[in-house]
Amino acid sequence: MKTTYNRSKIMKLANKLRKDEELSMSQALTLAWSKARRDEFYLVYEVRKAKRGSIMHDMNMLAESLTNYYANNTYNGD
Image 1 (cartoon, rainbow, N blue to C red):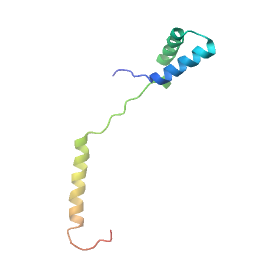
Image 2: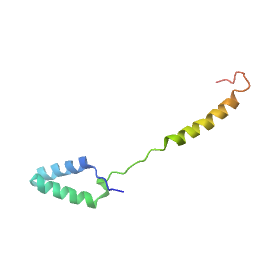
Image 3: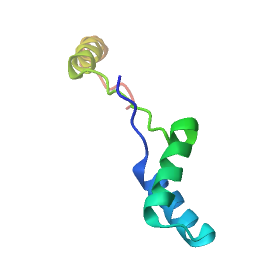
């Protein structure tokens, strides 16, 4: 899997280095990227969503239980 970095945090670090250390933007970006490659703080972790079909399967199971629950055609208090 391809490593993804939080570029916003890297740019903020580069701007901070540029102002505090009085570096050029090129030097600041070089330092910021080298720090980002060493530190986990700048990584973006991918979160995968569940497949849509698995949710529908769960809903189908719920429908069967609700059918059995309301099958007696009387008021159940809900």
